[in-house]
Image 1 (cartoon, rainbow, N blue to C red):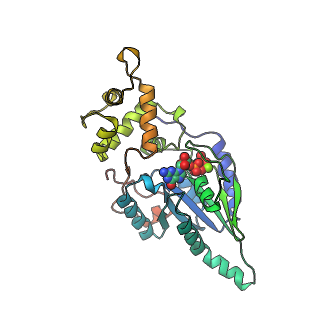
Image 2 (cartoon, rainbow, N blue to C red):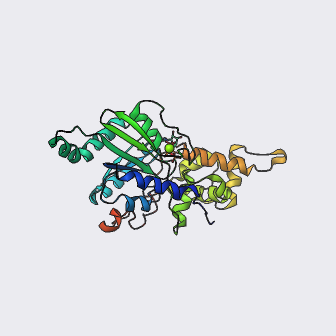
Image 3 (spheres, rainbow, N blue to C red):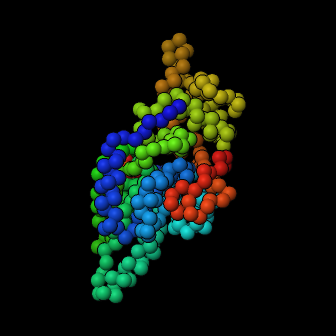
Amino acid sequence: MQINWYPGHMAKAKRLLADQLGRCDVVIELCDARLPYSSRNPDLARMTNGKKRILLLNKADLADPNVTSAWIRRFREQGLEAAPCTAKSSGKDILRLIDKAAEEAVQRAAQKGVHKTVRCMVAGVPNVGKSTLINSLHGSSIAKTGDKPGVTRANQWVVIGPYLQLLDSPGLLWPRLDDQRAAKRLCYIGSVKDDVVDLPMLTIELLTELLEIRPENILERFRFSDPALRGEALLEAVCRGRGFLLKGGICDYDRCCQVVLDEFRAGKCGRISLEVPPRRIPLKSSLTGKGESPDDKT
Ligand SMILES: Nc1nc2c(ncn2[C@@H]2O[C@H](COP(=O)(O)OP(=O)(O)OP(=O)(O)O)[C@@H](O)[C@H]2O)c(=O)[nH]1
Ligand SMILES: [Mg+2]
C-alpha cells in the first residue's frame, strides 16, 4: 500500500509558519503519545532548531501510560523538555512548562524594565490536538477543532493572558516520506485524510498491529475468537462478530473499516501505544527530529 499524502496547501502553510518563527520565544511541538516516533515532523525540528522547545505527547489518555513514561524519560535523556499531555485537562502543567522555557527571555526583558509578552508557537502533524490544547488554555472554543486532519487552515494568534500569546497553526506533514510504515501509522490516527488511503488495507494492517500488541482487547471489542487471523479474513471476522452484514449475509466492509478506525481513534480498543522507545537513540539525531526507528511491540 503506497500512501500519497502531501496536500498542495502544506508547502504554503510551512512557509507561513516559518515567517512567524522569528516572533516566537518558545515552540511547543505536539505529537501523538501512541506514536511518538512516527507523529513527529522532522522538518519542524529543523525549522525550530535553536528555539526553546517543549515536546508534548498529547492524547496521553489514549496511550499506554507505562510506554508514555518510557518515551518521556528517553526524550529527557536527550535534553529535550518533554511531557505527557491530555489537551483538555493538562492546562496548568503546560503553563508551568511554558513559564520555565521562557524564563530567561522574561528575565532579560525585566532587566531592561520591560514586562515581556511571551509568544509561543503550537505546531505538529494534523489532528494531534493543537487547537484543542489552545482552547483549553484559553478557556473557550476560540479555535476550531474536529476529529479529522486539516481543520485549522491558517495561523491564528490567541491571547491567553496579558503576557502570553499562542499561535495555532495548520497541521504539517513533510513532503517526502520514505518511511511507509510511519505514513501508515499516521493514517491510523487520522493525520492523513482517509480518502487518499486504501481503507480495507489500512484497516487490516491496523488490526494486525493491534492483535500483536493487545490481542485480548481486539478479540473482545470486535467479537471474534482467533488471534491468528490475518488479511481479509480479519475484516470478515469483524463483520460477522459485530453484525456488519448486508442483505443476503454479505459483509459490509465499508462500515467495518470506518468502525474499526473510529473506535481505535477514540480509544475504545483500550490504551494502546503502537511504538515503544528504541533501546538507544543517538543524541545528535534525536535533537534534529528523528532518532533510530522505535522498537515495535509494547
Ligand atoms: N482523547 C483525546 N482526544 C483529543 C485530545 N486532544 C485532542 N483530541 C481530539 O482530537 C481531535 C483533533 O483535535 P484538534 O485540536 O482539532 O487537532 P489539531 O492538531 O488542531 O488538528 P488540525 O488543525 O487538523 O491540524 C478532536 O476530535 C479532539 O477532540 C486528547 O488529549 N485526548
Ligand atoms: Mg487545529
